[in-house]
Amino acid sequence: MSTAQATVGQVRMQSERASTALSLGLVTTYLTLIVALPIAALVFESTNVGARGFWDVVSSPEAVAALKLTLWTSIAVALLNGVLGTITAWVLVRDSFRGKALVNAIIDLPFALPTIVAGLTLLALYGPQSPLEVRGQKLNVAFTTSSIVLAMLFVTLPFVVRTVQPVLLELDEEMEQAAKSLGATELQTFRRIVFPNVLPGILSGVALAFAKAVGEFGSLVIITGNLPYKTQVSSVFIFSRIESGDRAGAAAVAVVLLAISFGLLLSIGAIRHYATRHDRA
Amino acid sequence: MLRLLRTFCLRGVAFLYLAAILIGPLALVFFRTFEHGFRPAWDALSTPETINAFKLTLIITAIAVPLNTIFGIACALAIVRRRFPGKGLVNAFVDLPLALSPVVVGLALFLLYGRDGWFGFLGEHGIQILFSLPAMVIATIFVSLPFVAREVVPTLREIGDEQEQAARTLGANSWQTFWRITLPAIRWAVIYGVILTAARCLGEYGAVAVVSGRLQGETETATLRVEERYESFDVAGAYAISIVLALMAVVVLVAMTAIRPKEGTT
Image 1 (cartoon, helix red, strand yellow):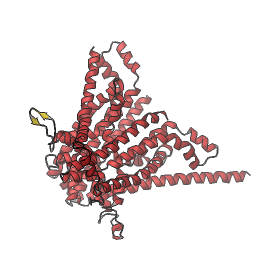
Image 2 (image 1 turned 30 degrees about the horizontal axis):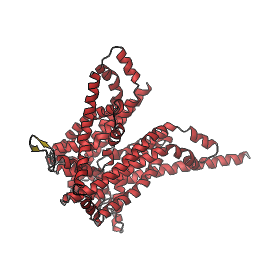
Image 3 (image 1 turned 180 degrees about the horizontal axis):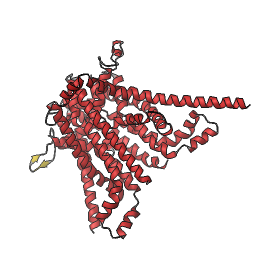
């Protein structure tokens, strides 16, 4: 009897182990096939030309101009998002007005809307056919750096709002009331109580927005006109290199973007880690 | 008084921001599409190429979403419930598509399945991957990979594993435990993740643009068709397809809004 029980136990243990192995095997195979192998092929291709060749491609004037443009527009967009996204989140949590639910739902629209459609819609309002006029002149931002910033702002809109909103919702208003009853001004309360609490949310939202902006492609294709040295960002640069058959050039710049993405993911992880550790203390 | 002023200022900034970036442009495209009635828009949509493009988009979505759902659930379970070497690496690779440029994704697949790539030999055996449906599906799977896993992980952490352990001690095997205990508990997170995945699949542009080869009527998805129409100076056609894609996005949005509160309560 006891041996029979032992065998039943053993069989169960074995089947448990088998199912664990099966599910882990499935997950790692899928990840390897879909993500890891293509990434490895990309990195391998970029090393084909050697360190010297890699550097030559990455430091070519056109690639450098594209990367510089990508970085400064993305930084501007991330910072703008940090401010405007936090204000929007604040209004959605603390303010009350008619149609708030609708506004709250609309925040996610840039996520659901295809990026190419986003570019097209922005071009309709701010492009050559724009119905808007500034000082008697037709407003037209097509093929300018403003159009890049505009498109990046559109696609990154939800990130900061959606990371700050839950933190604000959970934030105890009693803390703020206590601060005010102790004589703190509105500004002091915000700076000392609210801001430190929402900062990790803002930072991880800003980092996500930055990552998205650096890699953005679809919404920029139509509206920026892909002018080298002027409006060509790195992702569009890579695309045009693929189209002209320059695989090494495309791969080298792509590896730079890949490194930026990995770095940002690591820093977002570090921010989350810090924020949760802060919670427990 | 000052408080009221501040409230209105902040509200004003938020509204202006949303109107300038989001609502204004969309409203204008909607207006331009139907400026001359429904007829031109309908004509643009009912061309065989456009119908084919939408079909292709739906086929790709129908393949990518179920695969990513199964993977997402298995992956979330592995990340939350199991300990194994290389977990950090799995975590990093699952998140990567969120931060990586779609063009880089497309290029990586292009290099892997291209004629000189590691999987280039498949082409020699008559298995066409690049510039046909398989590559487009793989590209779409790549970019929409994280959403189910990312939604399910926090829910799994929250519900804990007491109920699962109880089921185990009562004699349920791991399959039964999953279907009767775990899946019902995470169902809203799964559904929410599926909606996000579907939205990403329907709207994918960059990665597919690189690997599709853009053969009209063959490997042209709805989003690629928008760009093609625009480049061929058929702005009305581009707008009409965009409006259909935007309506799909609105459906996604409604579903997201309907499910979000429920997700909080489970």
